[in-house]
Length: 92
Image (cartoon, rainbow, N blue to C red; front, side, top):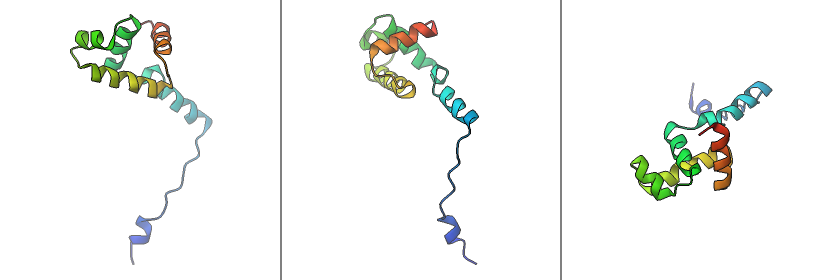
């Protein structure tokens, strides 16, 4: 009895239920932001540059850029204006 065919069999793809679809949308919402991502967002929304934000957070400007790229990816945001609007709506 060989186990090799079972190892290479394709796993079935689960079909999402309406409840799990809304839960996954919530997981990608503002609650999914890490504390440092929220902090970086707060600084940018306050009008600070990446360099100013990096200095205040004790990071490099590249790390701040990475935080903001992750926020954009998680929330489907493409501009700084949208980031600022998000921060205002979150009360940051």
